Length: 68
Ligand SMILES: [Zn+2]
Image (cartoon, rainbow, N blue to C red):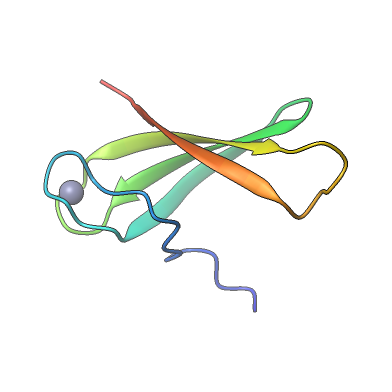
């Protein structure tokens, strides 16, 4: 289970509605992970922030954020 390039996380492309993204980059912050994703269908870039909830490190909630 090492293929994280084509994950589907419920994020939907705001441009075309596609739900499949390539991970273009990852930044780890204090208790959140920022990922840059490219839509497989139209190539639009999105930024998501995954927050680590309390102390359960494998439980994250994901927020999609428009990246101009
Ligand atoms: Zn798209």
